Amino acid sequence: MDWITDLPYRVITKEIFDKYNINPKNELRLWTEFMTSDGYIANPHKVIKHMIHTDFEKPIIIQIFGWKIQKLIKTALDIQQKYWKNIAGIELNTWCPANNVMKNGWWSALLTNKDELLDTIKEISTKLDIPFSIKTRTGLNEDDKKEQMNFLIEASKYCHMISVHSRTLQELYKWDWDRNFIYELKNKVNKNCKIIWNWAIKDYEEIVWKIKNLDGIMIWQAAIWNPWIFTPHKPSLSEIYNTILKHLELMAKYEIFTSNISQDNLSIETINPDLKKIENIDIEKNYKKIHYTPLLFRKYLHQYLKWIPGWKELKELCNKTTDLKENIKYIQNFFEKII
Image (tube, rainbow, N blue to C red; front, side):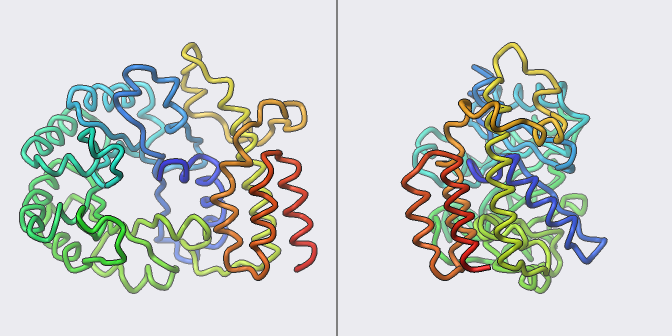
């Protein structure tokens, strides 16, 4: 998710998974935020933040979107050439239904011309030496599902993995889903193509009983407030408190790190930095470089807190400030009263 699954959030989630996962067969696979191929070709340092990752996050998949075939191909090939040793694959997003990009022909709009999209998938896949995947929906609308099924069966010949959101484009964000479409799809696709169900799972137990014949479950909104969702572990108030502070501070250090990125330093060390290099950044010495972290952290904080009695008072305080130290003080005072 854009502005959600950034490096700090992925690191927090991976640390929790490594600590509490009880099944050695389970694998946590992470995706970057989606990055525009048009932006990458025109001015890479403006969008490269969406692709920054550490070795700690492996295996990680770089997610791109766009509609101009040649730019998508050029972006995928450039990423492979420069960064292939550090990534598990490249994914084309044909899922998101946001109006502001649909009108440009991106994301789910690509499904309106399945023949052209299939040609794009074929060309990218055959030119890449690393795994290629797509993220999509069950179709444009109910009448399109049969055609979408046939399209995905054909696309599976060229994809290592297909993640399917269980709603049509017409259904947008409605709380409806079609699991049977995805279970059926798994039985019909190329056996070498993994099928992942993309849906708002509520907890780990739901993952276990819904996975059935699928190769995995992709979680989105429910993971924002609950990075523990990939494990059966239920956090205590103290653990939530410590995670909030660690997440907030890591976001601040990450903002400092990315503030130094320019067109001239897009090296592998920038795109694939050592996590310790970010964690060891001195916030106090670089405090003037922190501008957006308190604002951007609100969406996480609201979700972390929403099940805790009295959380709205803290939410209101943090919504009124853009100063990191004030945010930390408000959070500390709130939890000191309830732990």
